[in-house]
Length: 556
Image (tube, rainbow, N blue to C red):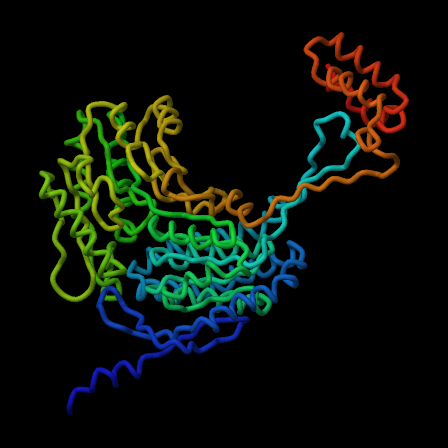
């Protein structure tokens, strides 16, 4: 029998579509293959929305917003809890899809994507109401003492979430859930390489009972993404990805002054001190460097180890790295799957080649395996310095450069010598050294004797210093990024205010006394001027003396 024509093979691949208002919408802009990075072969296709269809997702989210916003926190929490039940029931299916489309082993998908998503849903369902509840804001100015003042947290409206391919479920679902918990509706644009995982999130929330339009997931060509960002009906943008793309998102968002949260890249350092538990440090850093094949913005991408323990540390790191199994997760137990994108493997190769050309030594790994799939072996490099790309640019792959340094001072200085500042880790047994590392390492997250894990803690904020981003996308800080802060103040309306028109001579005489009563350094001067205020007929008529007397302690 003749072999089937390639077009015939592709025609039998299943096709998946976008979700708008809880309904599948077949795209009119063509089909995109869904690739398995372990085989380099397509296993499905997605239909791509055209510009009009993509805009319809924003329309659906805007239409749904008043209804979703009007729900109580408890009603929203019911949807989040139901979504958690769906994820739990479908956990194996989701993990296998991540393995097939993104490349990480299913066991790792459970660990770093499904589990954090479940924790986020649970945390938001339990605590969003408390974290976003209206808070009293007691006036500090005595003349305002009678006013009932509060701070409210109110949703923005339509949140556009543009999410990455390295953690396509954990990051995306947590972001969607955070926006929903605060009362927003969402349009999610997943990365092209992991569109099916993104579409599964729409299915989760649909099954959980989210109202039509509250969650929409769009498969579009990247050329249409700027149109979504620039749509004036989008009220907030949350982008996770590279610094280069983040700049473009910020420029596009500026057209409408749309607020943004940018969670960008990292070049995350680990500092190994001479007193560190070297066995623990080596095991932890090997995991932190190679989990998800190094495709983590919080990956350990450079190590600074004090020289007197450098050789012992490197021996342990190389031994641990050589024990890792690399291959197609579907074919057997492995720790390291394929890189998600072929172009990402080329960047990894370029970084390693540049380092070797400048004098670095490859201790293990360093050459991609022959055969199908976008694999690259976990690689350890020594003899590195800051002239090398591998120490300055985000590699985003399974490469661990290790630099021996004379002292802790040098380690901290070099760790901070970067355009990035997302996460950093320190490895020491000394409490004072740990405090110094926590204080001096320039990063949005600093961990001692562990690394990478904090996105799995739902209360932990996530974001970085310098070019690692703007704002926060996780924890309390991330939740409040999804809400606008409103200050509200209520007056009982019983009398005009002291400073209202007409001004007149009495007010001119009164104001210096009011200033001195509130701000003079001498207690006697404050009291004397307070008595002059009380003696003024205008103050007695308008000053709300009873409220001020309740807080008279502020004069002392």
